[in-house]
Length: 302
Image (cartoon, rainbow, N blue to C red):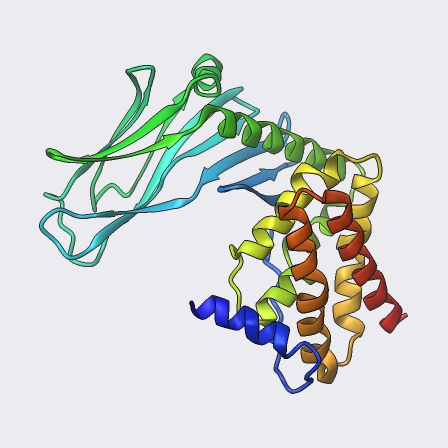
């Protein structure tokens, strides 16, 4: 309800200049690292000088599970898969955040079950908050062909989440493509440019301006437009390079006194219509509407 009020207030105030903007701060990323969201997944690809190839990881959203006989909950990474090019193998891991006061006698079992067979089993406790295991390519291939059940149990109490094979397969393909892009950027000695791709792009700043979080509906929809439609177009790579290059230039050139008016108007008049068009399946319309808005912003500071 609060977020909905913020959206309505932003649209209503699109022409009023007296709102304050708190622009997003770009993440401090290492060289040759790229981050990307894909549906419920967080993807990361990185490359080092001594690596055989670019490595990558896929992390599913964090989950919350109530602890038995307590008023607290256990937070855990539902599923994370990473690829080590040097070893040529995959790793599965799970990180937990236990509430204050949790003791070692509060263990949880974590299992990945595929076609009725347990592929990976961890015992998690406040003393062992992170666990990982190596799996072969054949096991990873099995997981992208058949749904995997994540089971977390406290004694007789069991909770489970399904990792859909199709969704995992698409996320894996996207992560592999991201790794290729990181390697290509490294080879042409452009690693420093990657930092802007995880930071202050205009859609993120405009959503932050109205008080919306990084995982808000609008940003998830814009990322879906980017990941599923723009990158598949012949002009996709060039369009994204232009967008990530022009965003910090616009942010740096605009007078701070005009930030509130500009970015709240951009949210109301560009982001919102583009989100509606994308949700209706009008991908090209959403792209053109957003692109023309960015071009107008660029014209203000040129």
